Image 1 (cartoon, rainbow, N blue to C red):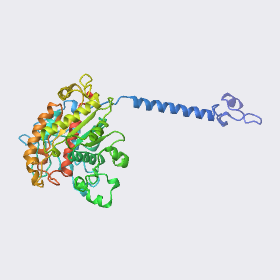
Image 2 (spheres, helix red, strand yellow; image 1 turned 90 degrees about the vertical axis):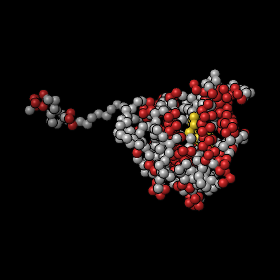
Image 3 (cartoon, one colour; image 1 turned 60 degrees about the vertical axis):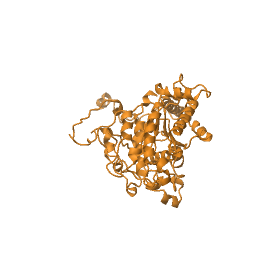
Length: 435
């Protein structure tokens, strides 16, 4: 027995012998925790974290459009032969077009608005920006206040998540114009905040009366709720950040109201202050609107636009190629126009929205100067003229002629949401990868 125990390394249990090795507790490591070692460990963790954060920040922001805009996707045009409209393409990016994207919005049932009430999807989808603008400008409805359909090819109806992604491609989206453009900004905030009831207004500081008067459709009542409208997403971030569905610090949309020509100096100064003198990491996009406050005077509108474009290049020369940007304010008006017309090799996205159609409540004294005949002529003329200046054009008369208006001038929530989605479609098509 003693031989067996010794052979297998098991100590004898005789008095004075060492206990078996398997009964001994393992020895503690020679490394022990000291304040100095804890400090060194924390410093190492801090260095690794800081280096990782630096690499993330310093990594250039990749600007790109979704793949369905840059790749040729198959589409079968014979799904329903002889049908007036083909069903939307069975592709992932068209899924939001076929469902109610407002289903999860606040006050969806109270306001009783579905995105399918506003736009009826069909195929094919527009594949380039010019065909998109033409289709959206010349579409129509089958009945009063029924869903709007572009002509020839379709637009997208984006989910809020897609809208957040589109805005994240831009450093800032600046909208210049009158109350019609202010309502576009309000509608964009409805989409960004997922709130049909109060998304367009500053509900965080509302009184009980305002919460009643500026709800759902009445957010765009210019008599009761004009000053309560949201003018920039920065105000939402400051006062009610939890209401925004987009990630923090990824969107910046603002309107600067410029309603008349000549443009007051203080309005131009505020606009210039929105533009950096050095090229940012992401592009800026501009949306213009003008006309009614100058009684649809075409020359006044063109002069208004020239003033805005000149101020833009003077403040931010990076908007135009260096060799083509104005070098001094003393240049003649004709030289400045020539410089603006050479913008093509730069990346300066600009869209002009002409006023929507008039309604039956339009006061009689304005029917000659601002009635539907005058609006149609103005839209066509502005489209031709601004394109010569390198500015793209979106008409809204067709979209709005069969829609509700509060006072014969301003669209309600439904009409303004369609107008806002049109702007989003234009932004989505911009070749940000060329910036």
